[in-house]
Image (cartoon, rainbow, N blue to C red; front, top):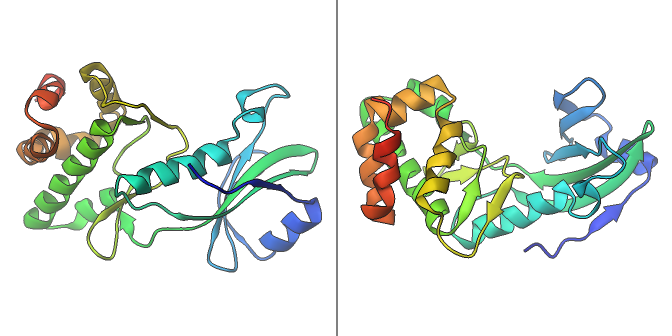
Length: 222
C-alpha cells in the first residue's frame, strides 16, 4: 500500500500547477487527464454525488495503492508523486500527479509489428495476465491499450484504478470473467484468440499451470 497521503490544495494552487498544461482527456464539465509542463500527468477524479464511496476510499488512493501492489509482483507502473483533493468551479475533485511510463501501447505495437515480434509480445502478455491472476489481482478493464511496451521491451500497466486484489489466486470463474472485457475489442480478440491463440495459451500455461488455463480454452471463440 502507498504511504502517500492526500493533500488538500487551494484552487489557486491547482491553477498554478496546471498553468500551461495540455488537456489530454476531458468530459463535458472538466479535464480528466492533463500533461503538465514538468512532464508529469495529472489525472482527475470528480465526485459526482455528495455521498459516495469516494468519500471513504478516494479513487486517487486506490490508484496509488494499486500501483504499489503491481510493483510488488514485478509489474511496472507510473511513478506516483502526489495525491490531491480540491474544489474548483464549484466541483469537488481528487487528483493523482504521476510520471508516466515511457513507451507505446501493446495494441499500437502489434498493429505494425512483424510476426516474430507479435509472437514475442503476445507471449509476454500471456505471462503478465497469468501473473495478475495467480497473485489474486482482478484488473477488470484490462485490454491491449492499457498495456505498455517499455523501452526495455518489457510490459507495464496503466489505468488500473478499478483493480482489486484478493489474498489467493483468482478462481476459474473470475479469470473467465476477466477475459470478457478483452473480448469486447475486435482486434485484441483476433490476436489473442485466433491468430496467436496457441502462443497466448502456452505462455499462460507456462506460468499458471495447465489446470489454471482451462478457462482460456472455454473462452476461445474460434
